[in-house]
Length: 573
Image (cartoon, rainbow, N blue to C red; front, side, top):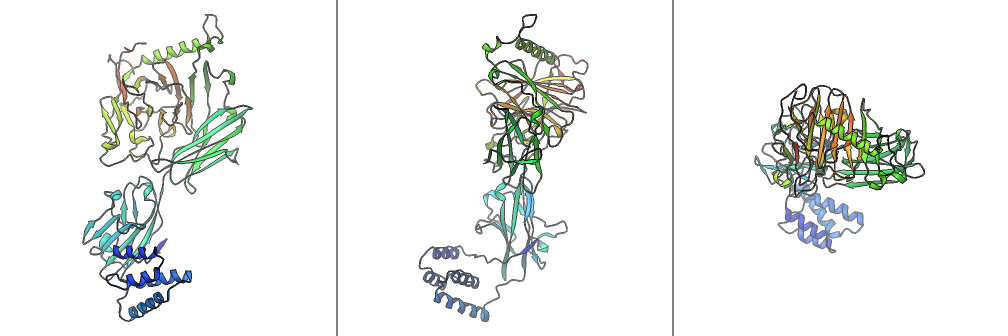
């Protein structure tokens, strides 16, 4: 849609200030007459029209003001120069762009003419004196601080000749949510001026919905849904077997990045099949489903505080996850509860048998230890030193900011070298250093991606696009998450100091261990094809660094060292 709008812009700051002062006074007509008929304050014809309209609407227009305005109109019609100019400013509006991308706001002169010697001013609403970009006498002047380095002249289309053809479009880089709204394109010459607005609409697509399920009394299930990283405020919708359901709670939160988080929950029966969809009203909707009938309730209310619990959680995503299985074990500590376990013929309780099995599995995994090296690609958002990595402190970004805001995305991810095309491999990642707290924000896993995306403002890595990892976030203090769609929550009672990662490429197994406790955190079952690379992400805001643990190197045998250094296991157990 093309818009042609004439806007009178007062070029004298003192004039605008005086007019505002008059409007704030009760003796408005007297003030208006005294201040605008005496030099140097010029009375514009457009002001007369505006004031007559304003006061006629209130039926309180002062007769003196009316008379003076009519006189001005008469004099202007006889002697004054025309207020119109020999060009018209034309724009295309609205313009939609995704947060973090660049955009061109189209603006050009009709009829076509050279604009190199004209004044061009782009400004936000009520910010004429603080322009986004000001071009005059073939020089750029007075840029608003938030737009320094982000704005320049652009081309409205591929065939445009730029300024010489009257194209004064604005090119805006790294669009933020604060850029939403009107931008005014103002052009003036010695003969007149004109301006027109462009409405910029910024969007951001958030994360896939995260579903959590909690069993309650009377066979009721509390299902919650959460998604973050949206702009503007998204729409969340619940349904059960394709029938809309009203939630018990729906809460929106505006994050410090300017993006929105939405959280909702509802109570359903154990036979329900709820679906939670989140999206912008006219954009792609992200959906997560769960079939409560397939969830096996393994923990009785009276015994939930203790013992070992093993169960499989089956989730169905809106985009089906082919050949993916997830199983995890959760440890609950209460020594008194151990006495209630049944004993086998060797006098071992079920708990003790599970402990022994997991200890044996971890020992077997460690036989395939490899020293993984970090692939340093000079990412400005990461600090890499040998086998240690952490996020760059905001003060070291030279005036920049993280393009993904507070979220943890591929912007801070890094691969390990080299990839594994077959065989069994195990490595460990330390999340703790002396005199520091255990890391809370991190990813650890593998990826089939040859290159890590440099900008993940609109794309979130998951199993469907070649990212298999376990993640930890301070926002969820009692659970880890698998990178499925929807995410699978894995409860824990303490964060690990060291995470062990075991990859069996041929059998399609990826397991994560709490090394200090010698327990299995969780496992993926997937079909791995081609090279699979270790994946790391130190997250944001932690004092502790992430360190890939290296051990003593031994000679390479079989497939153990097909892409990385195999080592002899020297870890004390």
